[in-house]
Length: 469
Image (tube, rainbow, N blue to C red; front, top):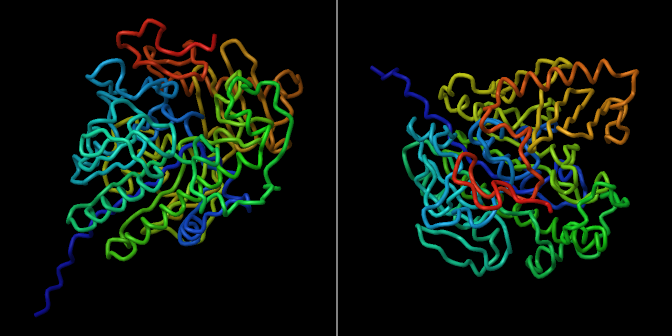
């Protein structure tokens, strides 16, 4: 008699590829060469309304793996120094907080990390990780990058994008050979600066030789442009060379993605693996008259180029070739991954959007669905409106349906005062429900020049945050 028992299905795996400073506009710019990502989108789902939680790396990354806003986890700016603080003990910015890998590891997952961490001490594996290869600092040169392998610091002489790929492919190979479900996050430093020709291989730069990048706007610097930042201002002085480096870095990541997919797709586990590609925060390469992200301007900004990021997912239950323009937030990615893994998140966690990924395409109401913050800057966005408030101003109100490029600030227009008042009330109520008073960024001196230590620790002499003075 045949055995009719049904085996318990294996829980899904996760391969997460994260870039650093990639705006969503790169997905529609015809000059950007990313065949592997294009193929992944054709085989999966692309979200065109996906937003980061903060328009700068460390706060955004902390929110990605905790499901908490910066005013709850306390990381409000990019973390300065070598991620270890001012002594050999190291500093861990997410101590005591639940993270995606920690929760998954307790549930039987084997977790790996390769690349940029930038959330504290990168010398030792963060909670939940078994496999660990890290960029020690989180940024810097593409050649001669400081890395930590098997607990040993060294300088990587080769192209850091290629080394992160090699380490990630090796880890993926080991994970595929195991019996446990796995979670592997591959965090590239690309396409973050530097973009000068000496920082990228000729084979990548050559792909863009002679291009004048006609789809990328050329505008005079916005009045708020941070003119003290030499790398950003170089984008105005020599946009072709700077864009060549930026796009070469993106194509380097794409080749890494191709190598990862080649390793994955030859294994039976490919059918039960979610592959997710996204970025920590957006970036402007001249769009809206500035180069940079949230701290590319003073005051800090939350225009679409800074807060909208690419998001592509392939995996079990994902309909191939679908594009969804729903407004969704990276704040919910923690709960979404746990939901797909069949693991319950902590009570009070932001709602998962796994059902939408798996085909639930109920129309979104015109209500607030996306929020962002960067220190005192706070943004609330609906499908048709966006409000940005700051403790001491200036505030901004955009009617997105009429003004999709956010060019006309209607904050003082009496005809839409009711829109401002309604959004402001929603914004304040939303943050009040989620903020920790001891970590609230609304009144902190965050200027975009970096964070020196965790809130609540012994502050360095110059304070928690670097001054713009």
